[in-house]
Image (cartoon, rainbow, N blue to C red; front, side):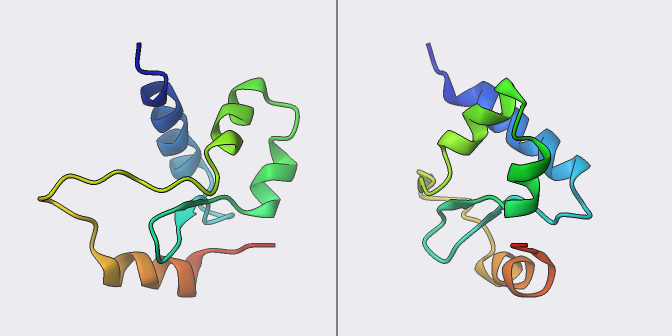
Length: 83
C-alpha cells in the first residue's frame, strides 16, 4: 500500500489553506520544506505529523513534466515565510 498518497493530499490541502504562511515549499534540491509557523499552528494535529515526517525528503520525479525551477525559486524567495 502506498502511504505517500494521503500525505501528498494533505500537503496540497495545507498548501491551499495556508496562503498566509506560504507553506510548504521545495528547496533547490526539491526537498520538502515546511514553515515554522505552519508547524506551530498544526503541532497538535496527528494528520499533520505525517506531513512533518516528510520534511527534508526529496521528490522522485518522472523524466518528463518536471517542476518549473524558476517558479519554485520565486515561491521560495518571494512568497515562502519561514517564520
